[in-house]
Length: 89
Length: 366
Image (cartoon, rainbow over all chains, first blue to last red; front, top):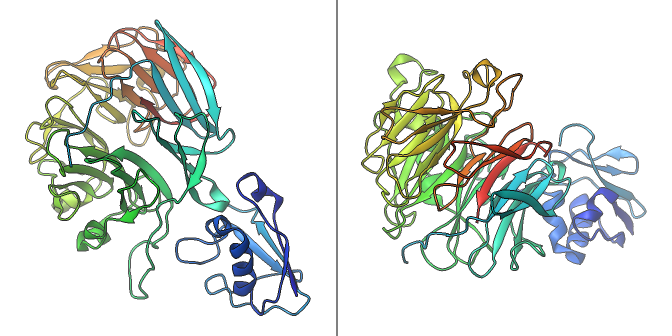
């Protein structure tokens, strides 16, 4: 089960569940979180379903690479952090 | 569809700022700050309450995108509603990404619950349910001319002015920076450019008169004479007396450059402007803030200074930073450096309401 955590900065806008999900890709993991709180989707992804320009995701200590399809693979025990990028925004 | 009932509210107003939404209440000649919402967050525009207390506020959260909030009790409580969203972008689409960048305008349309939203990167959205859901107006978005639009102040084009005809149901005029003035006679089914006479000095000479690349900083309509429109353009001031079929240039004192314009609610020949020195120097002429008012359709102007700073002033009033109340007497003006002024006599004299607000995006009565 991959562990997904969201930046505390998001808490003032909407509920940010920390959860364990049986996710094979970053897309799967985020969808699991959006299922818990559908409102969260528009804070993380833009109109086209891409990662927002000033949101960054770390998977096991490395920034995710595929910002459009979110196809980065997860391991069974991956740690996923969804954060605000410090540039821009 | 029906005519749009004019608001009669003159003692309440809203200030959308870089760091929150502020309510203003007037008692006699004094305005005071009331409730604050979204403190710390950029509020790009606001739709004041209708008779039932329904209102909207648009936020731009930066990292986390553009959000829309609704209130059913005139701003006492708020809840998030779906923001306008662009449909899936085809692989072969050219032009700016189909991604919402900013909600720049919110206005009521014809019919119960009909709202319009002007956005960056150039999409106009319509809601038929008081803003609970939004649909991109594809008839405009898919016009070939849209791909010739470009940004004015932002990287991408944007719809900032929305002027429904107060009597003719379905007729709406919008203005785009930089994409000219467009009108629909049928609630957004068909569109036509309405820029005959506007001139763009920033273009090659052969394109200066092209209506599709004009930068109207703001367009407003006179409520009692809807065929009268005023345009504060990047290259000057224009007036139309024929519902934007043609535009005639107007020369104002000190400078015809600026962003804001307000049309008198009852007098067809009266409008207010806030000049800045020039495109390349966006500060008050001589560091003295003034309001230019015409009462004869632009043939002459009064330059109004009483109560406004006349030295060391570098405030700029942006396109939505000037508003007139339905009585034609109360005015509010807010600057990008956060100073808010009011007038109770049509702009003859001004006084400070609040000197240290966050940068002001929009002021609206209602």
